[in-house]
Structure formats: C-alpha cells, structure tokens
Image 1: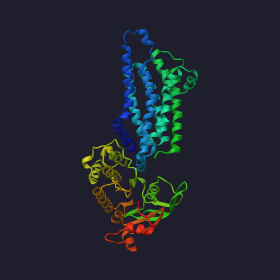
Image 2 (image 1 turned 60 degrees about the vertical axis):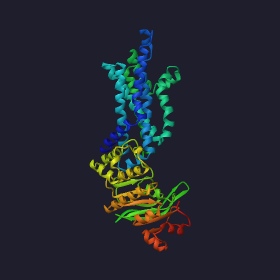
Image 3 (image 1 turned 90 degrees about the horizontal axis):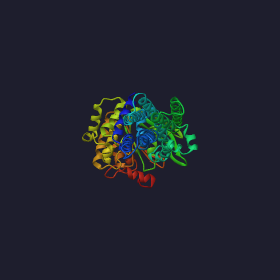
Image 4 (image 1 turned 90 degrees about the vertical axis):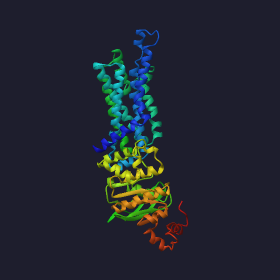
Length: 240
Length: 234
C-alpha cells in the first residue's frame, strides 16, 4: 500500500506541474463549452437546425476519452522509463503493478473530474447524468490501459509518440469516419469509441439501434481485451 | 565479512566481450573503487550487481536486498518537475521512514536552502548532491556510486568526498567507479583496475603505487595504469 500511496502523490504533484498533461484534461471541456456557446448564439439559427447539429459536448468528450487519454499515460510511462526513474523505484522495492496503479489512478481521478465537467456543460441530469458518466469512465479506462501498453512497448518518449499517435487518431476519430464509410463502420462496430458515440447519440436524440447495455458490454469487452494485451506487453518488456 | 563479490564473471553484448573473468570481493564497511577508462566495464559491473543485467557465466553476490542498497547511476532518474524535497518524499514514503529524515539528508548534502526548488532548475552539482541524498535517505548498507564526482567542480567534489567518508564511518560499504585516479587514491581502501573488461591490478591504492615505484610527490595511480596498459585514461 505504501508505494501505491507514494506514487499516487508523486503523480498528482507531477501532473499539476506538467502543463502538457494538465491541458489534456482541461482543453476538451473548454472547446466543447466555447463551440456550444457559439453555435447556440449563432445569428439566425433556428431551433430545428440546432436540434440536428452534432452535440459538441458528447463529440469533444468522445475525442477526450478516445484520444487524449491514450496519449497521457503513454507519455508519463515513457518519460519515467526514458529518464530511468523507474529503475530507482524498482530498486526501492516498488512492484511494477503498484507503479502502474499509482500513475493510472491519478489519470482516472482526473478523467472523472473532466467527465463531471462535461456532464455539467452538457446539462445532463437524472439517469442521463449517470449513463453519460458511466460511458465516459468505461471509455477512459480502456484508453488508459491502451496508453499504458504503448508506453511499455515504446520505452522512450519519441518512439511512444510515433507508436501511439496514429492509433489514437484512428480510435478517437474512427466513429466520425464511420459515418461516411460502411467498411470503416463495420470495423468500428467492435471498437469502444464507436459505442461511446452510440450512447451519446441516445442521450442527444433518444434513439438507439440496440439496447444500451449492448454498447456498454462491447466497451467492457474491449477493456478486457486491452488488459490482456497490456499483460502480454508487460510480460515481454518489463518496466524498468 | 564479504559485502559484494564476483567470481569469474563473463559478460558480452553481441560480439562485444565487456567483462572477461572478473573476480573480486569487498568487505563490509570499506570504500571499494573500480577504476578504468570509459568502456572498460565499470558501469556494466554495477548494472550486474544491481540486477539490471544478468551474467553470461560466473557468480555474483550482494549481501543485502535491493531496498538496503543506495544507488547513484549514470542517469540520475530524478522526477524533474518535483522539488528536491518532493523527490525525496516519494522514496521516504516507499521506505516508510519519518518525514524529518528528508530535512536531515538535504542538510547533509548542503541543499537545505533548495528544498522547494524543482529538480530541473538545479545546477549539475546540485542535482548530483540530490541524487546522493536520495541514495543515502534510507541508511543503505551498500552504496553504489557510478562516477559520483564526474563533471563536478572541485569544491562540490570535495563535499561529496567528505560525505562518502562519513557514510563509511557509519558502517556503509561504498562501491564506487571512477576514472579519476587521485580520487581513488585519496578515498578508497581497495581498488580494482580494469582494462578492456579484465582486471589488471587490485589492492590498496598506496600499496599498488609503491609496488610500481610510482610515488612521486603524491601517490600516483595514473602512472601505474599507464605502466600496465601503455595508454592513458581518457
């Protein structure tokens, strides 16, 4: 427990002092708020046109959970490996799992704060509030595990970015591309960000082709698969 | 009592034979120096002893567990955005030692007026001292110091020598690597001289100097090294 607590505190202090990481948790709700405000107050816009426009809050939330949260843990783990900080932690008796839980615990807590900011901006209340929060956290967990896997595999910051950025683009923007291409849509049908979008559409327009639990089940199945991939990367590459 | 030992250790990286039959042992409470030019295998020996690398053949022994070892390696591994005190608090909490120890140790390395300065704003010498503070935070029984005074000014280096001597007096075994022969002569109880991954001489530095008639105005290990290898150090 001691190492976990120490690493949680370390990561919290480090995140507060790291603008490159901190901005990821702040910028997406701000963008959502600004665009939402601009669109709502656009001169001459009708109620009907407004209702048919994509919801900026759920769109930005999807990009944050599907893309931003892949890059963040990847950057942190790769930096600690690159600077050999992990070697000193491991010599002090810190188990790799404690390190990963300490670091990712902070990311998850920060993601929860961002998710709450999104729900407030989006005006979700009652059951919708909890559905949106559950969808955001399910997507966030999957992305954090994927980002950690990239961080482990790369071992240094440069390779980590080269590895994770294209994947984050595909996963984050995949649902948008799926709207224009059936082949992409078929592939995206098994990816968690697509199902975050399905849930978001239900919250925005009250329509869904399948029951919501179906989308949640696919998101959690993704998390399980990503956990297995993470365990394989962890076994093959180690951490220090 | 033996603190650290190696017996006929061989290590290669691909076709590059880095260590060829390394055998030595260090006693508890002594300052033991590994001397040699860059690429002679000093850092590889530390990496093997701290279990970062395995060996191809041979045996190595370290008498204590990894959490009783203090480390100062080639890369400082500091959390650059955290303050000096916070860098130490991370490890203090991991080891489960009292908070006041952080203040004590920062004072002992002369960083008590930089406790709130973030590590990336420290000079090279101050970073080096912070790394030493982290290494001694938990009263380690064995301290591995890889080139502890490289790139330091003479005044800071002297402060670090003083600290090393104090640690030895408290019973820690100090295992250091250096290519500074004067440093080795003044600090070490025993040294091993490495060249091309092989031990070319070992013993008390002053005795080695005497053996090779190398005493001029000071005990001159560097001239012994040149006699043995026909080459300089750097």
